[in-house]
Length: 385
Length: 184
Image 1 (cartoon, rainbow over the protein chains, first blue to last red):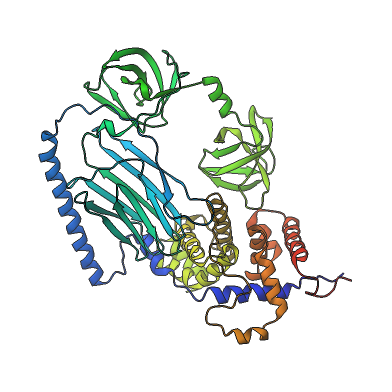
Image 2 (spheres, rainbow over the protein chains, first blue to last red; image 1 turned 90 degrees about the vertical axis):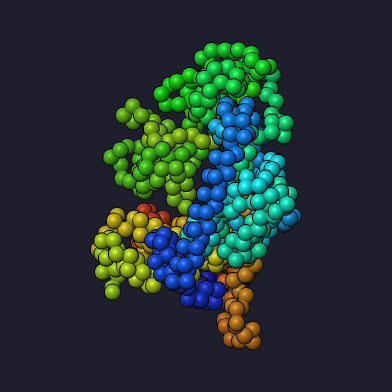
């Protein structure tokens, strides 16, 4: 039987297509910039621009520091405001495009001083369109209060952070990123306009300089009635950021801050102050200290359900927790290593477990692009899905 | 500077060694990545990142071994990984270039001079899953032998043979009957 697909045809087709679509490329300048981080090949002109840019940034930082010093005492220094629950916002395209809308997570954070920021990443954008973030959060630019930090890791860009400032609500910040994308702040949104189709990652952070956000601007998410907190409960923080106080009440000294999603243990409470139930919690620092926090932003975790969720089963998606995990041909440490995968790699459990030497081994795929399977020890796996 | 010297230099911390490797392999690597992902900008990004990984991991590389298969495997795998990641969010290949389209600047009148069969085979390749394209790219574009593919892929030679067979079989399904010699 003859082979209907002539191998020479395949080679010729591949050669022709590749040569036609990709002429000779020159990647070295961008690679060198990425590696040295110092733009060693920069011309004198760009060096001068860099110096000028640094001077501007330094002046800006000085201005911010000066304003902060003069501003904070006038704005009632002292204990931070009540922690404010902020619903997670999303990044989404403004313009309607064919295909599924791009939805990317952004995060709102309240720091220990009550400052609110929104951070996010418009990741690997390679479509023309507009992407907005922060529309759920009414950022309120005031004089010298809004800082936008942009990182554009487009091709040819080293990913340097650039700091911009919005002077007033009337200002639209418009920053041209690498010539073909624009980031602007308008109508209380950060909008990224992508006008080319090169792949890029744009990450940004918007910092609202208000020491005290206006609590009325936010509607805390109502927790389900089944959320019965009791001493001994394992709880998860539902606010984007939650202050831990030395005592009950927001006027009490702040000991620390935990981010949304972190786990705490209730050790005492509740204690009602100013209409808020305060719970004493541990687990917010490595030293095992206790502190008080607003129970409205705690969600009880069912330990049994949580444990069940951690159990690896066939079909689970798992994450490698060891920096160089061997995928072996058989469920045995002496078996041939087929590959070594890095920490954080996601794998899919296809079979197992087999108990060897007191430990479970699972058959996994996803370490190799063509769906091959191999075995690795459960000890270095964590279920993620 | 030959390849071995470039690698030795790079292992000693001289990025001039990397510059030589980039000069030698960049175009072939970007073309290979493009053949898999069908997006030139993405292909360049992948190859740029792959060279940076080479720089970071060159200490683990044995200069006695050939560099090209090792590096090209990184490029092909990274491209496939990117396609898989992107597939969770949106289609990656938003460029509408088709395999059989004329290249920029090509005079359409010269196209008939090209084998029609090659054009059809190219269009068919475009319909293959990315992983099968990657297998064909390694074998027929990068010119890797089956044993080299097996070695760098950490799989048995028989597995490589089987994958190539599958890719070609898939093409057979997709190709119109008149292409290539008849089976009978």
